[in-house]
Structure formats: C-alpha cells, structure tokens
Image (cartoon, rainbow, N blue to C red; front, side, top):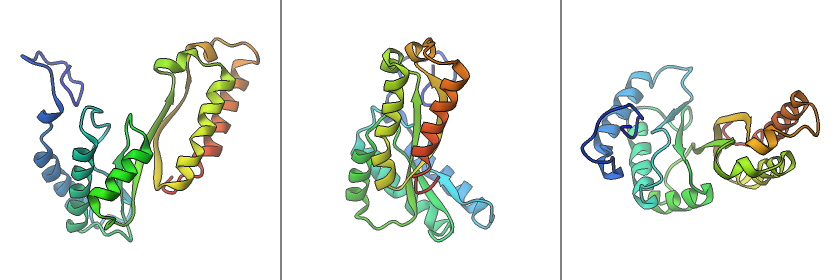
Length: 189
C-alpha cells in the first residue's frame, strides 16, 4: 500500500514519513482555506488526517503550528473557524504539551481531533465491562483539553462482541450511552 493514502501501488521501497510532502500539504491547505473562508457553514478545518505515528512528535507539532498559521493567514479567523489537529495513535496530553511548546501558545480556537475505536489490537481481549472502563478513562483528557471526537464506533473487540451476558442490542446501547456521556464533554464536539 502507498502511504499515507493507502492506495495500492507497487513501490520500490517502503513509504517513510520523510516522504510526506509537508510544503505541498500546506499549499493545499491554503487553497482550501482561501476557497471556503467566507462560507458560514465552515466552522472547522482539519490540517491532515491520521498522520503516521513514525513522525517525530516535535516535527508533527511544528507542522501543526505552521498549518494553523496558514489557515489564519488565508482568512479563516479564530472567532469563526476551529483548526483541528489530529492526535492519532498518540497520547493527546503529549501532543498538547508539544504543540504548546512548538507554537509558544500563540494560537486560539484549535482542538485535537481524536479517533476512538475499541475493536483493534488488544481491545479484542477485553470484556464488555473492561471496554466500558476504557471509555470512562478517557473523560479526564476530554474534559481538560481542547478536543473533538472526529471518529468513533460502536464496534467492540472479539471477547466483548461474543459476550452473551445480556442481549447484544442492549450491550451496544449501553456502549453507545457510555461513549456519548463521555464524548459530550469534548470542547469542540
């Protein structure tokens, strides 16, 4: 697969985060921001989607700092448009701290985009109760940091999905309510 988009392409060598054309990404972001800067329905713009976890955090946050500057210079003001910064496969507290350091706290109306899934990797080993605990454990970060929940799902790991401690519809409804009650604390939705 050809990262970062996932398109099937035969490559001579594996994709590396240094192949990310950040300058081109910033130019594209500028074009999009300028095009939609006066549209009243645009209240947020994401600077990229799910960046590779191989990118050193400081490099990623420097890109975010530059991206926020691009969006603001393009005419999307902080009083109207939030800038979304993905905290994909990283601890959002680490991303927030590094972004704060890299940007010298100069930006307003930005948030960290979180994608929460409970159906990959080690989540397959968790019970329904353990899955619910993981959801609840996220509330602290969600309540204290500027975040939005950009993606989430009702899918659960194998062990929880195969549980018959209660009817499956009830389990999913419980899981949905648990997530919504926590995600409702997100500052940016």
